[in-house]
Length: 591
Image (cartoon, rainbow, N blue to C red; front, side, top):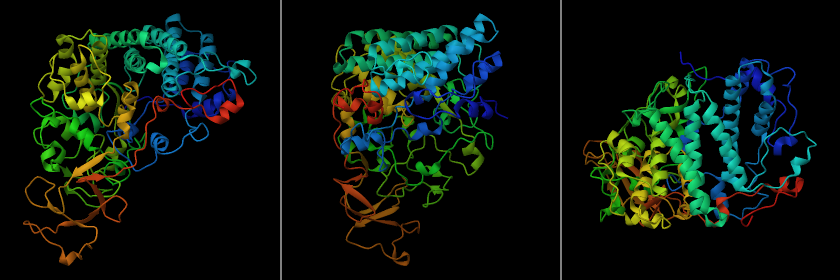
């Protein structure tokens, strides 16, 4: 049986029975009081588990609405870009219940009669969760009120204005520093927060803040960007030098494993087990022609096997599906379903099991995602799927990027980071002075300096290694690259009507006919040389009643991307209802 962190249901009920998502709920009382709790280390440990909020299988669909994956579903950023957003319509995110629980703990935990070492450990855990909580608020709102004690419903501090981002972030990294000094390194239970988890989040968030400040002049904080890049560098280096973690030999197996507890690459995971803690895995999103699917832009970012950009090929824009996967970085075929792949778990895919043949639809690009897909019939496998929340691979990428941004990068740094990732999948190593890729230069025009070309390749490596794991949106935001969200995503390319091979066996599988034609009855459909009836699709322009849309030869799923307003859309408004309650909460950057 798996051993993983579980949260006690009775304690959850006590902790959260009085909470809701209003601003600090004006800090409602709970049924736990300082008089009847915090009397032992077991109390502190149980309370800590109630703060665990790490993601699960949802990471595999979190790239939707970025240039990695279009979606026909509704997302916040899509609604903003195509609509007229305001503080009255963008209302999510201003929830403070967890901060209340963290500060309640910090105000009362020291009454437990335990050693100073143990008290510091639990204070470190609470401050880690507070730092993580506040970093998400900063990423969304920039300036936010800082509270480090629990407030009563009548406390005047509830009417405080926003504190400057600089102050709040300083406080966040004071919390991270304390946590990284005092959280125990000896905690080895799968899913539990230990010193390594703290360092990984510290490195991640310091990289975010350092690069956000560097590339966002509207904050007037560029002079302090190096401070956070150095924090990121040092935290990542500490993790690397610990020697506890290393890359797992099989890249693809990291994302469909039911037994990641002892995986050497997993710094933190979310662990599941059938009928005890089901993963919530939902195959329809990846193989059910639901709302999201990978974009051609992502497929084109993977290098050729010889290390040259795929986009260097003269015909890269018009390559057919079968040719797109030839001689490519093996991570492409570990992330995206490829010609000749066999589908076993067809429970949500009407095309059925067997050698993969795309099922085209108006809401799909024609590409399907493998990362996070459980290609087995047994439901217990999907329900028991483990999720690598923090991989050592991310730490290596963080270290390389921080060093490059600080103009400190060396070939030795590349060899212990990027080239470890490349070596795992058999790709050639990255050198300090690669030929600048014009496509990457056009995507990230603000990258300059002596390390520009290698930094662009580090960004490519990050996109490829972490594709479809939920990093892309934050990366675009911190790099000041929101304009990339305006590009209309494309799917498979077809040069015209006719019959096409999608499996790579040189035998046609589908036939595209004009939208003005009707799909023939089954008995009248053509068969291929194997005696299998072709699958017919009516294709036409956007807005027609076709099976799917073609525009300039490419499948189009999400054509109206709208406008990414800079710098406004790098931030969110405080909901108008909260400003009405507290007029001191002013809006920023055009909101």
